[in-house]
Image 1 (cartoon, rainbow, N blue to C red):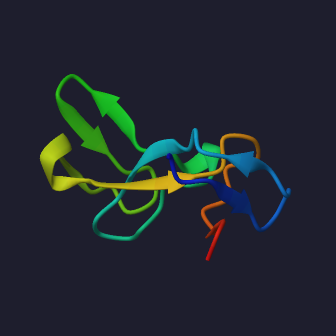
Image 2 (image 1 turned 120 degrees about the vertical axis):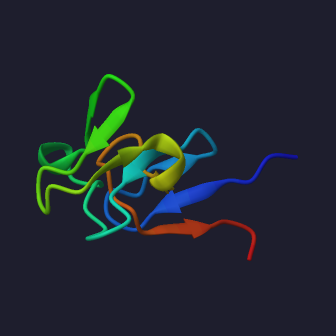
Length: 76
């Protein structure tokens, strides 16, 4: 059985979460206007100008509807 989640902002429910790349330096990445940009094989933060390969980034889940990072696991 797959895990189900509920968004704390828009009340979306489901298991198909978006995985987004987050800056390891300043934690920016959940807002669509502050997404990290990929240039070749290097990711670049638009906020703090950190640059690095994908294996140095952080990946976090977010709501596919509103991009909220705060999700509640259902069934707990």
